[in-house]
Length: 240
Image 1: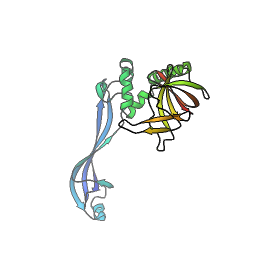
Image 2: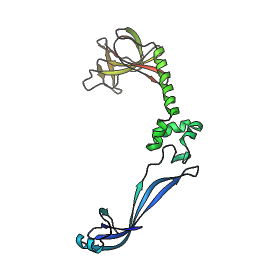
Image 3: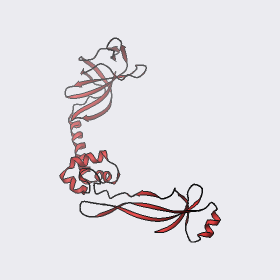
Image 4: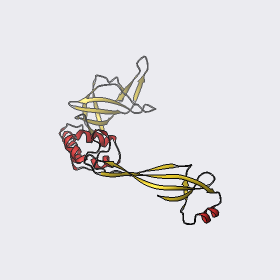
């Protein structure tokens, strides 16, 4: 413990000070420093005059940033090692162990927790390999799918009427299928229909049409994106 001088509200103030290390213990009996409690014990107010304070206590450090009333504690937190879980049902356990016994929990933790543990999980070879495998499966599905090509005229079956039109209705969207392929269709306009249940009729081939449940020939003018959703290939296209 040592003495320090800081400033309370009006007076330069004398405190006793000690730094008390804080630790967390993992499941294997190892101690990890998780922070420091900086403890200040009030002794007395000295003076409002800095020169007088310096003359009275020439050997004591004066910390001009130190502020406080009476006794107080400042808690400083340290980052704990990322190779451990520090909360939840596996608190104190090594991530490497849980990767083998409960990989789903590691996936959940990476998405729901931050800090060093989440970083350690996302950089773990098993985590990386898992998502590489998922991506490879998606690419295999996409490569095996019968995607629509630009310039093709095909008959697609619409699942709904238009939705999400822009303000001037010069663009709207609808959902459709072509065989086993899910399609999201961007149409070049829409006609709003009012009533008790208002809806949009997409403009396709120059004509506003009620599309829900209908099979309509369309010309593909752009393939915007191809994605896999719940194991099904979905192509987003723009039509004339």
